[in-house]
Each structure stands twice: as C-alpha cells, then as structure tokens.
Length: 357
Image (cartoon, rainbow, N blue to C red; front, side, top):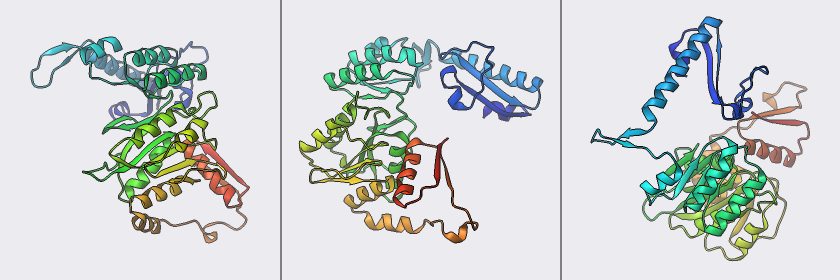
C-alpha cells in the first residue's frame, strides 16, 4: 500500500516469501529459480519504468528497515541502545520469564526452532506452514509430554491473556468477575467468526487458542485440542468453553477429556458431525452461528442474540431471476465454506459450489 501511494501508475505491489507466492496470487517467472525462503517483490504497473521504480523503492525501504532493526534497539525513555537477541536461547536468557515463542520462518526451519522453544520450556505459536505431518506429530507429542501448548503449524490466530497472536479480532474481554467464552479451535476463520458473533451480541472472549487445522488428523489425535480444553476448564476468566474444528471427526482424546468431567458448559462445533453420545453439560452444534448462540445463552445473552438476528435479512425468491438454481459461494476462510456446505445440504440444496478464496 505504501509503494502504491508513493509511485503513480502502480496498481499493485506485493511482498511475500517464495513459499507463499502462489497463495498470494503472485505469478513466478519459471526461468527464475525462486526458493521458499526468498523474498519476492511483484509489481503491477502502467509501464516497465514505473515498475522498476516501485521495485527499487521497495528494496530501499526493506534495507532501511533491516538496518534500523538488526542488532540493536533503543530503550524507551533512555535513548540508549541495547543488543537484540540473535536466537531463541539468547532471548530466553535475557528474559527468563518469557513463556511463549512465536515462530514464523520458512517451513524447513520451523521444526528446529519450535523444538528448541519447547526445550526451553516455552509454549509455541507456530505461524509457519509447510511443516510435514510427521514433524507436527513429533512437536505436539513433545509439547504434551512437557505440559506445553504447540499451536500450529499453520496457526493463524490466538488470544492468550490479552496478548494477540497472528490475526485476531478486536473483541470484548471479560471484566471483573464476569467470565467470558474461551475458544480452542482447529479452525482459524471459524474461531474468529464465532468470537466476533459473541462480541457483537455483547459477550466477551477470554482466550482463543488456535491449534492448527491438522490437529484432528488421526495421526495427531487432537492432542492440542484436548490440552487447550483442559486449560480453559481450569481458567478463572472462562465461563463457557467452545471446542471446534472444520471437520466432522471428534478426536478420541477430546471425547476422553469430556468424560472426565465438565465443570463448565462446553459447546462442541465439529462441522458436519452426526449425532453422537456426549456427556451431560456438553452440547453439539452444527454451524458457527448455532455455536455462538448456544454460548451466548449460557452467558445469559440469548435475547441480545435474537435482537442481533433481527437485523439480518435472508435471500428470498423475489431476489432471484426466474430460472436461477445454482448457488456459488466465494469465501475468505475454509471453515466458512465448510459451514456453507453443511447449511446447503441441510436445506436440501444440491446444486451448489463453494470456493475458498
């Protein structure tokens, strides 16, 4: 955005890692060898001269940022410079109380850094993708053994003790003794959607623990979902717990955790899941909206949710052209698309297509 506003004739300027280029809509020149760890600058401009100018400016800004942040930083107020840690070990040594490592490096380096962080006694928020399922299993087994969280890989959202991680919405937090809704989710867009729905109806969110979309894979076994569930059940700021995933399979570890007792209301949302036997105090929902509504009922905000729903309008037959029958849904979030499929099937609509943008 900065380059586009500074250079006339630039339509778009994108900076991304080589590994994420395709997902960012960047087309790579097949004649150029681009590695996953390479930084890619792509400019769409009115002419070559404008594009070259924009690329040069982007490179200049990146170099300036690198010089201003590498090695040292100024302490607030004192104006004195201090050395920045060059590794996780140095960071932990400089602040022994640190207990969370946020890791966002190319996938081939992510496992080693996450393993190192766990060894240092820190929870891990692993934003990096392109980590193999085998490595994920190793990391999460190690985290479980150490009593730590390993959120990810490819974990995009988290809110722990007022600290936001990745992408998180600005939602109300519990005040005083009033507890909020705690969410543990193998679904980033689903967690954010439910959190914002609860917030819009006047509810509060205590924590959002993202665990990565593959946590429900049989190889992983829902290790971090069950770990997050336990943490939220023990958390004083959480009154209602939501456990959710974008697939229908409820991991055995989660089922076992539920059987061990539910001191708080628990709302399960596994999109597409059929009827199942669940312990008392647990409710199974089939959509994100139903999950938010059920949680708000436990908070005593059912009437606020009903008022919110009245503000929405449904598509009617009069909105459609005669002969239209095909439904095409474009979604910016895999879970939102999965929810749409559930809704369409439940309504008996067969001619539909869902595309995750």
